[in-house]
Length: 156
Image (cartoon, rainbow, N blue to C red):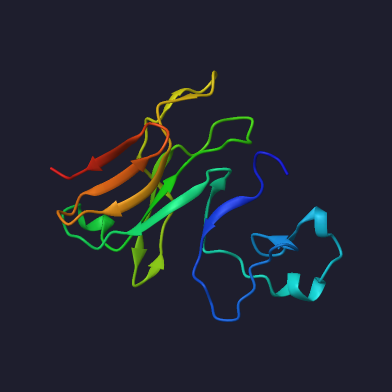
């Protein structure tokens, strides 16, 4: 549906909640492929908590429960953005961070680990981060499936 639609998102899951698919996206934005279908459900569609960008392929997620990074990162969500394959420009290809307070997202999505895009114009990349996990030592592990690497990020 274009470079800016439909955004990946992070959201809480409510029992019995309806999030739109396939009739609408990001709340009550009607999907043109299902226009006029199930308007009662579309009216109930819940708007997600945080937009992560369209075509970012936000696949990996972990909450930072360790104490080795600065306090800002504690209990927040790290998100592996594998990157676009069907967008006219490269988007994603990074690890993003969403701060949380009292179990709820606060603030905007932040870049945490970037540098995977080698050449934006030629659509060349160094890697595609996907899985993220917190290691026992409090560092962040990032699986890069096209670079065939696992990156370890630690605080000094």
